[in-house]
Length: 370
Image 1 (tube, one colour):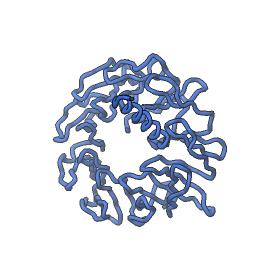
Image 2: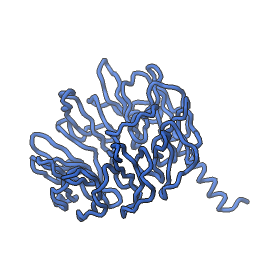
Image 3: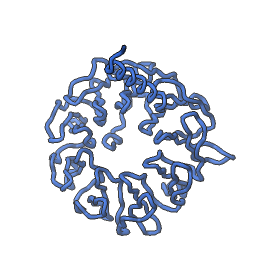
Image 4: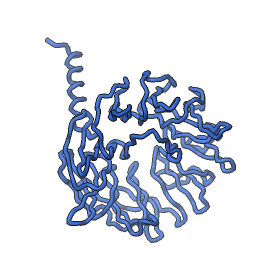
């Protein structure tokens, strides 16, 4: 008779395998066809006629398709069946049972009209807003006809903002707001101003800390929810705090950025020796050293010896995108390529809603915006 402990292990393995089989991981395009792969590395479905792929969230995969000779944003289920057909050209993943959809008004000037649908495909809010963000912590920022603020899940405007204020998503009970002088403050979920308009970059709180910049120098540091500077504004770049870790960078005398890992007290855990770095998440940070990419843990030690031509961060499923010569796919936390993928025109990470690179080119403009 098997012990309860053995049965628990077997159940855990079976449950994990089932979860991986049910969770979309990546889509890749070959010619005119997209193939969707789950976290177990198995094909979920193939689909043609897709002009753009969005991320996976709350059981649905967003995509732009051509229906009746018209660009239309739809949501597929995990079998490839269209579950929701919207009246918009664009959309984003579902969050808290709602998804933002939008139509271009003037794409050149990036002017759009936004609305919301619910998970049944019904319109929650008609396409009427000139700006809208996904729901976060029960609230979503919207703006139309000079009226702006946050709506709740009933559609009621529960926080009204002045006409010169722009809102951002809530995180840990706080949301950044900026005024027409390009100054940033924070409000709570009742709309109370908790931190005055004294900051220079909109950010969000993670682990109780938010990135801020010095007005005169542009240097980056961190504040707590009282607005007190907890990590001095001395860095040229820094990512948001995740799991009490951040990667911060200095320019050297040759104006080349060097990166190190800091903890939530600002203590330096590594030397400023990395040529590039990405946000710490799910137990590791991706770093570049000597033109190769590897992974360090929360102590700053390398997770494994193997390095890559290019790499992305680990997801909650313990898998990370990596490029090693002609081989592309997903590695586990031993550095083993467990889901190799064929050569394709495009790859799209359905977990992070982002296109995956296959080149080693570094785009510094996109570094700290996690």
